Image (cartoon, rainbow over all chains, first blue to last red; front, side):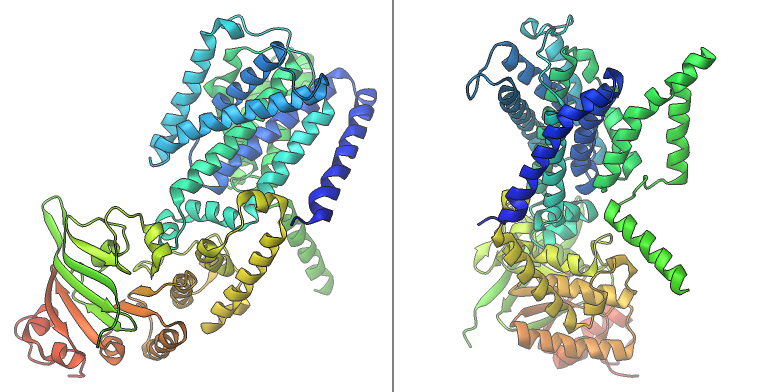
Length: 328
Length: 265
């Protein structure tokens, strides 16, 4: 039996909120801001899902872009070749094609994870890096999905409703997993694998599962990306894209969902927020400032913005501090 | 006395390259026993523990846990079959809380799936509550319940050692391997630990194999003792026999010593 109030009522309510926002936001913001919002959503999904592997389970994966690409291309291919599920509603088609993209990415995660998660840190990183590149090169050479020219004309079915809904699904799934016995199992793998095994945790199984869940959501993010930009090119899903996501996770704090969300938003918006500076000075300082910001933040707070805490923990600490001062 | 043999090692040898760390190790641990494993540093005691818990696989020989062979069985599965251990150099989950360390060990008895976790099913809530209640009860044994929500790394050394014992107990083992549980403790703490180990044995019905350097503790509570030196079992028997055995005395104190082990000079 499932807890009806939380499991059904709350999500359904949120769906209505998202539908509402889907209507309001295009009337409130211009296209540029709208793009930033959707890109932030995509990056939040990428960062939170990667955090499950890198932050909570303590594995070193730098191939997230490969899984994103797998999901992007498969879902776009299904849409473009008129894969019709559940009748002809565009939105629902997008939903199911996105799931398909996620599943393919998850399967890829399984294929990559199972053999390589026995490897230690650096070696695993190299395997994931290699996999990301393999995906990119394979896609580059498949004409049916456009190869080097890319895939054009993907229907722009990713709107605010779907972007917010998938962000919500991703965050809720990972948060609830973390706050369960399975989450503690993931954390134990990060903390001390030998000790974890000694108390009955199947560390390989949990590493692979973290990988698969994480890859699924990367595929979902890819699908949203494909159906928003309407164009896909393998060069988007390079090693640098994987590094971008790693930066978000490290900046936000490895092991903090709130941190990943905040960092994803900052990393999406910061280069754009610096654009006026470029226009005024006619010099592109953006990369310099962006990089400097990251360096300064890492020096000041190497644990990341939130470290291992969540927003609720930080809130508690702040309120305890101010209460302490009052009673002082 | 036909007591069930829970843990059995037969002619177990392990070599690391050219080094023979443990040679022809034999052990028959019967249900309810409290056996000691002693020897100078580097004798191979912790290596023996690693063999018995599946961290190492023997080069030759066989190990059976609750009647089943441990060959190529991973440590987590041996844990699920009923063996638990503590570590010489404390391996707590540092960033997790005191209670969470216990809960991780209780994970193997939990049945709710990941999907149920995401859906927050009733079974999840019931099992989580039961886990936490049992966890708290366990913490009370060493009076750690007030620190349940503190990070494990914030505990003082002695309490970290005790927490590790509780964590091992949380797996509901049949066999418990304790690796130097009294390390770093003073006399009164050691005495208190002795009593607690006896209590644990009674309350949980657990069979114990104990590595220790503190001779008072070992001679005080162990029914039977094995002595290792350079990987070889040099003596085995009741404490009185071990204390007087010349080979044991030589291993610990050098060949010129004549005093039995574990007595004040």
